[in-house]
Every structure is written in structure tokens, then in C-alpha cells.
Image (cartoon, rainbow, N blue to C red; front, side):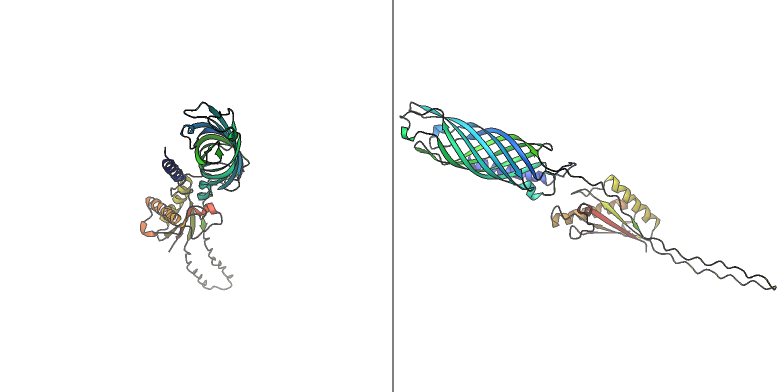
Length: 370
């Protein structure tokens, strides 16, 4: 596989993984993934590249890592790694074996945490870059026919790393990683140049700890705001005066007519993150609104949809709030409320009627009797 194909496959994989996050909810987990510490082990293979064609081969590779994520998107890793490979030279009388050991400090950029910071992401799409040192140890010394004896010996070299990682959070403490990338080896070994980008691919597991447990509030109960009826004063009872003389009783005054005060109520219908579907608990609230509206035939209903500002963006949240208002309107019509009595509006995240961010995933219904 050519370098261009590897890069194209990596970009496609990252795009597909990020697409999954657009629909991935936080779920019912009772913990938050950041900040946390981790240790991990990985195994795989690396492709050796030198100017000698016979030295190019896949070699087994292993690594041990420790690190930490300080924010949902930024982390640091220290990794120790090593691999072994055999070199042969055609038309020569010698072979030799090389074992390499090294260490790197890698900066981790979690794109999932950067784009979706408020979610407990199942899949982390991570870019990584680092720098370290490698030590090449020769188990078998080549003959002088292959290289000058003065050029034989173990070597230290600089190394760089660029790559990517898919980090699947299987459970609270355990994760599965698939990592691939390139290591840059900077050295001149035994008369030939080894300044090359060496591709590698590894899979591994990690143990994560130190992340905190969170408590999730119960679903908010519907809030019903009904204006209190004004209590009208009763006309005082008329006590007839004692009869002293035979007189006609004075007529009892008629009470003044009582004016009826129009009724008004406010109800809130709450939704889940990224959803415009009406849950079973919220359906009971809509039943109450419809029942009240059907017993007050002159009342009109104003519906205003909202979305929380902490997730999504203004365009997405505006469309989501419109769908929420339309869903409540359709539910009221199905319950017998005339569509001519209902007005639907949407504010997106431009207004936040509640101080609690999660409650702003709502439709506020105001019903008022004319």
C-alpha cells in the first residue's frame, strides 16, 4: 500500500468516526471521562525502510504507555517501545540482527472531545505527535565484507512520530485502541542512510482511572403556572330592623354582577438532548393542556420552542427548536384542539428561559382565555 493510499484511508476513517459522534448521545453513564490517567499495552508491526532494498520488511513491535488527559481534548503520553528485525545482503557473506528500543513523549489531540465537549463520547478520534530517542543494538555483528569494521556498533538516534488513534471506551476503566502512523528515524547506519518515515500499526488495551463520578438529575416535573382566581366580595346580609310599627319592609338591595377574570396557564414540555420526540412523561403534560383548552373554548395557545446553548450551534439549535414546537402543536391538534387556536414560534438558543442548561431543551406553552 502506497503512502498516499494510507493517508487517504486514515482521513476516511477519521471522517466516518466523527460522523458517528453527530448521533452519539451521552447515554446513561454515571461518570465523566476527563480528566483521567491511563496505562496501556500495545502490539503490532512496523515497516523498516532503508536505502538497502533487502532490509525493507515488516517487523514485530510492542509498546507500553502511561499518560493523562487534562481536558476533554488535550492529553500527554509517555511511551516505551521496541522491535527487532533481521538484515540480509545479497552477494555478501554475512547477516545481522538488530533490536531497537526507544521512548517518546507524545501530545494527544482528541477531536471527539474538541468537537463534542459536553458528551460522554463512546469513541475517541485522536491525533498524536511526539519526539523521542531510539537505541539500536546489534545482536550479530556483520562481517568486514559487508561494512567497514570501524562503522560497526550500537547507535543512539533521534526519532519523531505522527499518527492517529481510535480509542473505544468499552467500560468505565477499560478501553480498546487502534493506532497507526509514522516514525522518523534520523541516523546513518553502517555506511547507508536510514533517514526515513517508518509506518507502524498497533492495537492495544488501556486501563483508565481517576475520572470522577457524576450525578444525573431526575427528569424535571412539569411546571404549571395558573393565575389564581380573584375572590369576589359577597354582599353583606341585610338584617331587618325590629318591627316597631306596622311598616312595609324595605326592599333588599340586589348584589352587583360579578365580572369573571380570564384564566391563564403556563406549561413546559421537556425534551432529551438532540431530540424532538415527546416522551411518555411529557405526553401527560400535553394531555393536561388539551383538556384545559377543550373546557375553555375561547382560549388561545402560544408555543415557543428552545434549545440549550451548551451543545450544537445556532443553526442546528434553531431547526431543532422549530421541530420541537411543531411536535407539541401536532400533539395538541390530535387531542382535539383546533389548529386555528395555536401559534407556534421557535427561539433556538438565542434565548434561555431556564437557568439550568438542560431544561432549555423545551417548549413553553402559554394558554390564555380571551
